[in-house]
Length: 288
Image (cartoon, rainbow, N blue to C red):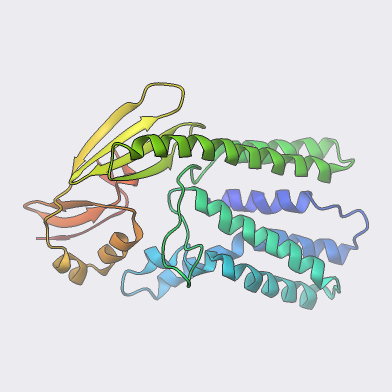
């Protein structure tokens, strides 16, 4: 998810906590635990500063988003709160920090970018592609709840908990529809990937057979619309590309499958899940 959505996740988690008996110091600690926990896995962006081998694609949303890192980040946030605000309820802070980090890392599984959810045990990029990176339903639910609780403050934490329930229901509905579409297209293609549209219940299906990739817009309720057919030069030797552009090798390992380009001007690969207006923004190549 994008940074704004993760920030709203933190605010909504903070709002869902009953703080009626908490001191000011504890409330400040809870802000750090929820907002900080909702952001801290994305600390991996700083790795781009020293990436000289094109590995940032794997590092971003890699081990920092691993489920195994949840207690590590939670412990860091808890220690920070104890040091800054001199609070003693470290068990509660650790628990809430863990929830915030878990929500961040797990929510990122559902969009096309995915995460290294089981690193370092497995370097497989886990991605479901059933929720867009910017999801208007998430934002609408959270923003509406924040506005309502500004005017109706009594038991506001219950309203925020309801918001979490609605978002969980949204994920369930999106995931179920995406799974049905995936299984349906799996019969026709050797490889299939999903990328959720910004419009709820709409998906882009990317199917690959041999060197042919079809991109199709589909939902469960209307007829599918064929968008593009792409052709991949599967017989191309990519070793020179990988040697001259290390980021290409990273992209090759990171993507479910790629389209290989080999023409008079360049040799490269791109991820068809992000193909739009004649190109993919995840495209690595070298000039001939």
